[in-house]
Image 1 (cartoon, one colour):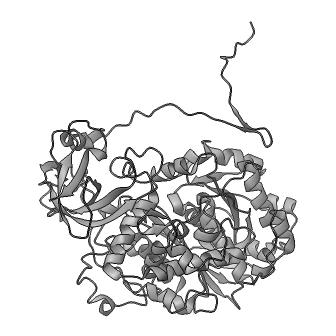
Image 2 (cartoon, each protein chain N blue to C red):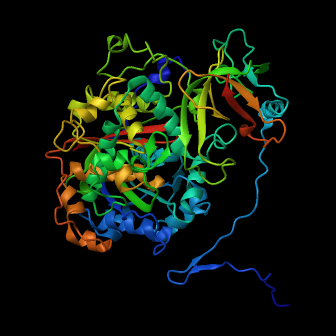
Amino acid sequence: MIKFGAGNLRIPHFEKPVFAVAGGLTDFRKRNPEKNTCELCLEATRMAVEENDLKVSPEEFRRRVNWCVYSQFADHFGDQLLAAAKIHDYLGFDPLGNIEVKTGGATGGSSVLSACQAVASGYADCVPVVGWERMDEVTTKVGNSYIASAACKDFESELGWMYAAYYALMAQRYQYENQVPHETLAKIAVKNRLYAYYSPYSQNPGKYTIEDVLNNEIVSSPLTFLECCVMSAGAAVLIVCDEKTAFELSDNPVQITACCGGTHTLRTADRRDMEILLLPNETEETYKDYKTGRRKDWPGFSSFLAARMAAYLAYNMAGIKDPVEDLDVLETHDAFTISDIQTYEDIGLRPYGQGRDFVESGDCYMDGRLPTNPSGGLIGSMHAVGATGIFQLVEVLWQLQGKYDQFHGTEGLWTRYGKKKPDDWNSLQVKNAKRGCAISHAGTGSHVTCTIMERA
Amino acid sequence: MAVKLDGTIAELLSKDPMVIKNQKTWYHMHTYGGWSKFFQDLQKGKLMGTRCPNPDCSEKRIFLPPRADCPDCWARTEWVEVEPVGKIYTFSEITYPGELFRAEAPVHLISVEIEGVATKLMSYLWEGTPEFGLPIKAKFLTENPTNTILDLCWVPA
């Protein structure tokens, strides 16, 4: 679909307001044979219900639930079809109805969207969204092969069986068109691993230098290992409610003012040139010279139409005019450093071609205009795929509730995961955060969701 | 009559926690269906794409990868032979491929821009050094075909 009709660009709305009241996580590890998948999901659910200052007992909470959404990317990894049924039973939610959602790397975001739709329509008023992935049953090389089965297996998967390489093709083209210094890309990896250092949940935290990233081994040129996301085992849970339930359960629920999805071809190859879909902070004037010189097409290999579509719908739905001004905290799907820069442009933090400035200006840091990925993101903290989009929203929820320190600085959490809280631990609480956003992203941009949360 | 087990076991990888080996050895019978002609013709040294024959459809260019049905108007497409020359649109040297890759790394993956084609086919460079805009021509692995997309690759023109 290259030319939009009015129906295609209809701005969604929720018939009833939708809220999030609680979130729960496990820690994320490369391998976690100590716990089976059911236990991981229960651990995250238990944290959501028991440690988020809800005004009801866990038993009272369970009696309020009327629908569940489950989020797992790949049955390949879990090696258990209908895993949702097993987990639903383990969590004690039978015989309530449930649904399992699958949209690749964006499965978490889409699952929350599904829960929002259930609540907004009146179908349900209290919905746990439970996401997980255990990528540790196979070797990393087989894991990469499984992930690459989420590329087109007829025309693309055979070419490397490695998603990093498919992103690398986009990265090279983006670099050819926009010439971002590798140092700028490295800064994203350094930032997110540093932010992960302050999180007890994170898998690959560390104090790295730009040189560490630049001198790191190449996975597929130009991407180094330190610029790529981790592969994790773990779970995440978000509790979504209608307004009445939200205030009965919590003194500080957060409203989900928009949750919208976009898509584009699974094969990057098939992305035909089109006119740029404009966000509220852009005009035709913004791009009058865009398709000149080395830039011949849009979205081409440099941009994600799915992310642009999701942001277009969500910003218009939530009344966001300028995301850098209107948002206080952002969680992006930083699967790779360069795809993060591409995403900054797709969601309007900078015009197309100028994404690097979001980093170079300092805007993306804790003391910048829009702190981005204080969770540590996918590069530093976790990518247990089905849990990822939920993890992002849990972190945004806690930021908006002012609970970053409670959920990252509490000594007992670090010991719970067998870790020692760093002596130089820093709070990454965004001061007075009122509105946050999370981007959940699949494939080389096959599905993207954009979710906006606001303090109620 | 007592049950007879077949004697196979799930190998123990760890005693505590108890981790067992679930061995998977079967295969899938995967069909290329309506795209079969593309793969069949690679083995004859021909590059085939598809085009929408609907005169009212706005997309006149060729799809490569081929589509048996037009995504814009849903008409059944027709096969057309594509001149096997193009230019490198982008490239990457893959150092660490995933399991199942049928070549030894490193390999240069490329995306190919072809005149009159709406898409930018992903492929690989058989030999030479990739650069943006480099003219290339197709090479077909007709002698020992893999029966996969790897039967098509490219060399500098």
